[in-house]
Length: 236
Image 1 (cartoon, rainbow, N blue to C red):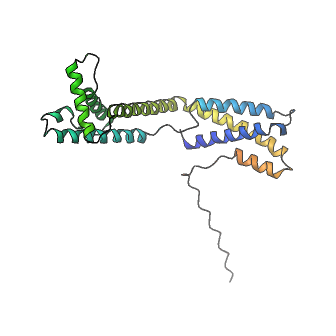
Image 2 (cartoon, rainbow, N blue to C red):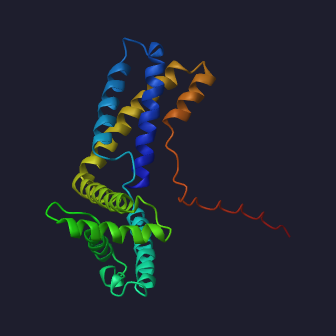
Image 3 (spheres, helix red, strand yellow):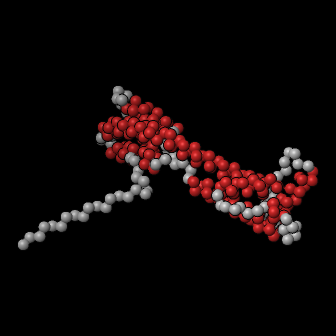
């Protein structure tokens, strides 16, 4: 979600919190309560549309993939070294050919297939898998290696799914979100008109409201440099 929309939504939320906390100051005869209710409904729709927070970055998935690849690399190194004692041991744990999500996940699944007993495994196969796992444990990897790998793979799937859903939601609801934000601005500005009147003689409350409804600038937004003052005209 664009930072500008997120900051606008944050302003709506702060405005609602202030208006509800100071509802006794809003004249019951005014349309103020209706503006608060309308802004609240708009804000709820924005939250449901995913407009109040940024989607998970692809970089989060990349970091998880890199961590999993590193663990698989450690296992491959151990397997290669142990193959000097048990020839062919490293054949079951080849390194990833390429560092991409699909390849890393396929490699992890292949490793797990050599370590995790399956329902139809006989006693000899189950024992062989346990022996392979013990080799890694004997060489400094944790006894929880299998569950650790499974957990890392689940994290990658969860983050990937959340990212894709956020991306799809953003694409599908961009126009709706923009319309809701425009409607929210109208309600907030109408509330501003009321509070400006109500707190005309109360500068502290007016300042608190102004701070609440203010839309903050993005930290990456550049501000224009001030125009230089014109030089005084020279006189002869």
